[in-house]
Image 1 (spheres, one colour):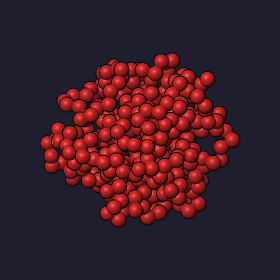
Image 2 (tube, helix red, strand yellow):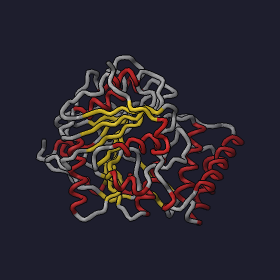
Image 3 (tube, one colour):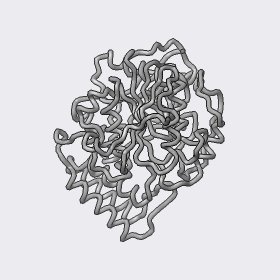
Length: 397
């Protein structure tokens, strides 16, 4: 595989929190099963898949119990189910706690690896960066939204960054870092070398880390609303404040395609140009998978209403910037001007036209963040609290 040797011989655990991603009884059209299929085609050895089902009400149980116990390329599947909905953060914590391997990778349930060498490339990047003496908190992988190509080229701080001077969150993981833009485009996808990761100070949804470090900093916080958006930014802050470094591994050979299943968005950018060397394969074409994903569906995945999205947006940023007086004031001024007064918050083409409702949501979120703000040392992982509400599902007879 492009000269990249699998490392960490004791393997890697891939944790997938899921909620209602199996609409159909057959698995060909279900995004969770696309994710699992892309993992099972990986060349890296010793992969463990852990699916934590957040009390789905669709065909998730039927689809997954048919797959438990299958051993493809040495890849095993564990399926756990919350008896009541707890949210993706707690589900991730539960998955991390039972992981058998030193390395853990968190994957959304509508993302696929595009190359069969993706996990091996990512692990290689992690290991080489660690060899340089870096104490790694987490390493983020590139995620291309509804496309198999990055959308644009930006400075890495604009791809993943917490901007404390302006109290803003930078998160554009479908972009490619300007700092690595010295090759022709095809070389990024089919080259024989791995692009060196870059240091950042933020994370988005898909990243890998050492289980030990993740548990040490407390994992995902349990005080974000369910469902929620942006809780990974707060986790990123705890990694860096605890003395660990964050990295972005830009190599497209380790990239994922995020389908944004069930959400109305701009027209999808269909895959174009040559695909990755050793590309993953599916019964459906990418075009069919993208068309299926664009059908609007509520109550699936981590989908939120525009009201929930606005609350999460303000709450999450307040949690991050509350510790700095000038940042806190700057954020609250922007929330008032951009969201409350000028209706500038848009969530998948949706807005809240009622000005009083916008104000109430924003003030509630700011107030809740004030109450929840705690010292870093007091943050604790919460997965164990819900052990009695968790069932490890066995294969179907």
